[in-house]
Image 1 (tube, rainbow, N blue to C red):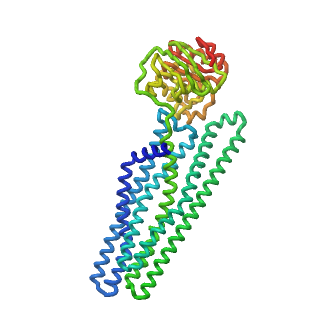
Image 2 (image 1 turned 60 degrees about the vertical axis):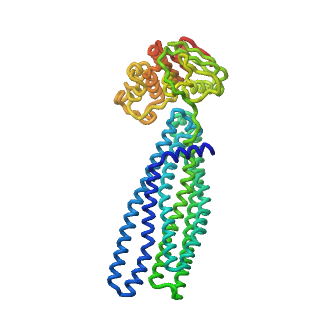
Length: 532
């Protein structure tokens, strides 16, 4: 709960412009509803003071007043709806930016326990629901203003009718609130399960090559089918709750308005109301149907918006995975020192890598290798121990500087949409030497447009070995002080692997390099091999 409150504080402090837009929309839409409520009242006045008396001058006067009222209410609605819409779309946009900023924050942690599809669902679907609730807020307040004006008008026309509306509306609104609670309870599970289904789908699409390779398509399809069915059932339950809610609200509104019309008709029959008063009363009773229906829609939007706002707040308040310092790491020879490192399966690891050394690290436990890479890359905080670069503790350095100083390139590094050259140049300026060392030049030789060939998102149009060589070239082009590679050749053939090992040794000469691998070719060119 404190984390959610922290996320809501972020939301509250980021929407000053939207609050101003909501305020302007509320005032203008209240003016529109007041103008709407005055229409039946003015019609009743026209009947009593002009039509019944045959006074042409009074008829022209009151028709002019009615025309002014129509011009006023239409102008208010036009600009009020515009401000409400602006609050909606700007809130949606701002929330997407906040979610993207949190996901991309160097301190990490936002993706912990969340699949990519879930993050997308929060950034798109949940952000939109929160925005829509801000569109609904001015509508609800304007509907309340309409009820007040209608009640005052009815009191002036007939005290019993006015009292009926004033005393009957609060219980009706409370009933609407009670009817909306089941919808709110079902909205959160619906959104959670829909996001989970999206996340599983994105996960399966990203790993489709692996699934085909190991023949696991039926298992993957069954997993997605189960998740999708679960999301469908949650959506159907939420939709059923919304349908029952809408029907119940409409029934309650209809009964209340029928009661108002019945009392008004009885008063007119007894002579307590004039013809114009009866017309005004019936018109106001019919007019009240709109605001009362608005209350139902607004309550439904708020029920969904609250659930979505909670999900957004939880993501924004996710604890950071790491905490960086403030100082930049100076350029140095590249001495890497690890002392007493405890992280996951690692217990008291000590490691010294001399400047310019090519060190091979072999691990029989994949989890231990992953933990070491995560600590070196400042993706997680170790439970204990220190990692130093040229005597400077990485934990006290600015995160960008620490990650640039000790660059960790994982074996599953993703490619970006763009050309092959753009992907390699994203690492640094040494494009040609890096491509030659990683044998990515062999890849461009067989591509239709060479290094200008466009790479689809995540390199899906390339083979695993092609993607791996381009990613390795990108890491080499960065020319980092310390480069840490994790199994960079698992998808290439033995001959190419030997060529890459030679190229890696040549290009990283004089620069500190750590290769975490079990490849004999890569370990064979290392100055030293240690066992993790």
